[in-house]
Image (tube, rainbow, N blue to C red):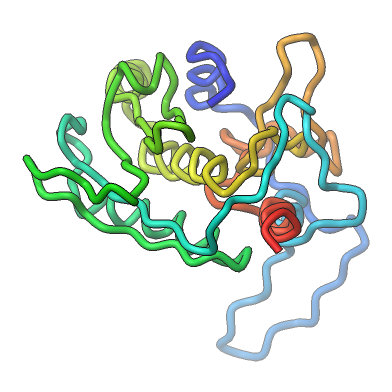
Length: 239
């Protein structure tokens, strides 16, 4: 992740006030039939996740996207060195969920588990727990080395500082984000909600929102899974 550990912890741990923003003040709902639950108006964030409007695919220009050379990728997950509060089945489910979500861009992504003590297949991208490999981040993709390292130390710090924070959501988000780099998305998105985004560039510039008032409506604005713009960008790159 291209976000400092301190900034990441602040974003993950700080509960910001506010409510989800509705479609509009004048939105009307048809009264529900008896016995049925009324429809819920999507928040602005929900709309941003589900829909990519013309001109919304923008990046910080901090990298050069490049198409991958294959239509299929295999990720091999190793549970060694994982924090004890994450069990293997739980993490595997998160890895598979991220892979399935990214498959919407037209690529075939498979996930396998590597038994303890065994070596992953040579053609697979290894997902492992390593503070050395993650370099002080929640997770870090090394495209050249074909490894996605998750930082157990930072997840331990998050648990210590904010034990009530849903760490599985943070893990889902960083898995989706780093997986996107292996699909050729090297630059980071400028839309706050995109899983490939970061919130600011360290120079006082903040990411983009459809409605600035929606900032703070949820603790973590970034989506845990690829958004419509993430998928559009991946699909356009890997045609």
